[in-house]
Structure formats: structure tokens, C-alpha cells
Length: 231
Image (cartoon, rainbow, N blue to C red; front, side, top):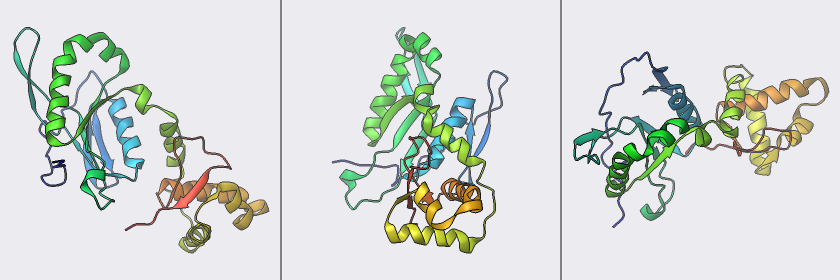
């Protein structure tokens, strides 16, 4: 039977991250209230990308300690970087997105050391399968992509202030039509001298997750938008 115990028994952080001189470490405020430690800029960028994904419910750093045996028969343990849990928005457990156990590793490192790291990654894959999860390795190609560039652009507008009633007008227009392009909203609500302000306002609503779009595609006047309805 399929099980998904990320939601039944929430894992806790198993290893505390300490500052290191070898890389940039710190704490990322996930959605403004959950502190998540990271050990590199690549991990930080992974958190930025994950936070923007509205289907993500939570992220847990250092979620499990997994025993494994090396090729020379030494018994060691391995702690993957993150566990990503997704929202349960469907009525069937079989259709729930499986939690994802993630190792964040620069491509140069895993290509150099993959033979030595393979035993612990196999152990992580088996552990994830037993828990009803997935196991994935994320490098720059899966993190530092077009979506991350778009999210960084939108971050400039996140703290910009707009009149709440004006924001609600934009949202109501989109609710009426279901979805529409940036250009449609500008032509309907921000004519002439107000066009630049309108673009900034739309990017602000995207950055604060009042609106959504396909963030993996370039942000242009043709970008299709829709309202995020909080349940």
C-alpha cells in the first residue's frame, strides 16, 4: 500500500549546520517564518526556488541519518540536505505528490566523486522508497535556471508598496476572465503614463504570490497570469 509518512510523522532536523570557512552558510527564512539552514550558495538558491513553488508545503533540512556501507566495508552514515513536502490538494493518497529527499551538490563535485558517493546515494534511494518518498540529486542545471532568474527579478518588487484596493482591482479583473496576459491587464487598467507603474504592480503581485504564472518561461508582456486562491 502506498504511504506517505512525511505528513503522518513530520521528520525533524537530524544534524545541526555549523558555520564553515569552505563555503557560504546561513539561515534562510522560508516564507518568512521557518528558519532553514544552508551550507552553500547553491543550497540557498535551491531554497529560493523551492519557496516560490506554491505546491510546496514545507522543507526540512538534514531530515534523516541513513546508514550505509562503503566499497571497502566501512559502516558510515549519510544525511541528505533537504526533505521537500508538497501540499495535499487531491482527494486520493495515490495522487499525492511524493515528498522529495534532496541532495544539493555542484556538478563538478558529483562528477568527480560519484563512484565514491554512489553507496550512500543508493542507500538514500532505498531509504526514500521505504518511506514513500523520492530521492533526487540537484546540481546547477536544476537550480540555477530561468525560473531562478525570474524569481530574483521579482524579488526587487516584493517590498514595494501599492494601495491594497488597487491590488484587489487587479485580482478581481483576473478572477473575472480566469487568466490573462500582462499586456491585457496593462491595456485595461494601466494606460499611458501609468504603464510602468502597472508593470511594477503586476510583478509585485507575482512576487508576493497573489498571482501565479509559468515561472520557468521568460517574463514578458505575453506572460499568462492567474490568481492564487488561498484555501
